[in-house]
Length: 278
Ligand SMILES: [Zn+2]
Image 1 (cartoon, rainbow, N blue to C red):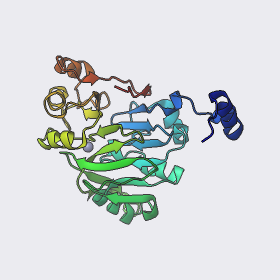
Image 2 (tube, rainbow, N blue to C red):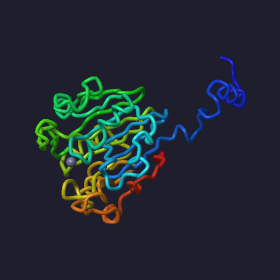
Image 3 (cartoon, rainbow, N blue to C red):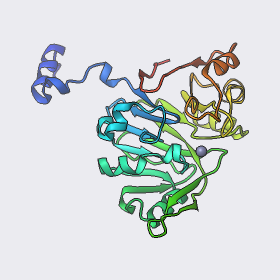
């Protein structure tokens, strides 16, 4: 094979792709953007954008630029939803339609959304726990157990009244990036013993865990699971600072994590953070 010098290769790439699109080291670095609550945009190592649980138009901490215009999120390649509660389903349907991409979610949440006419079936993918899929090139997504509930609250356009519809069981997701890096987004969950099993089986590098309490684990429960059961390389607390009933704070979580070698990451809403390598 002929060796091509770096400079020549770079110039060739500039010629082929245009200066703007030239990949840099930074471009290969996966990134998170926190949209508030459990909502994130994950940029993968090949610059694909996954959005999970985006609660933007109604989300009190979602960045204003996205509230004004969902297309400001950029091109989204995959929409993931953990369950039907409004702070998770949020603007998922609108974003899937806007980008003409599929929304993946628990099968029994997707079905009623389709039968109620909220989203066309062809923009959805129904799957369930352990059903690993590769929705976009190089990415694997596996739904896993979450100890929570799920319900669709839907306004019937004929009666103009709110109705509650069962929405199956909630899930968390193991998201494996192109380079093998694994993120476990837990969705909403309480403490459950199989967190240990999921940690041992999937070996997530980064765990995103709810700490708000009331609806989910609080700071102490979350730290217990991370320190004693899951032991990932790093943890990012989520699902706090958006609902007055979910009072858990980052400071309480950091305090409860003291003495652990797990790296505790912190983000503010609207921040973009490169996911650390270690
Ligand atoms: Zn919920």
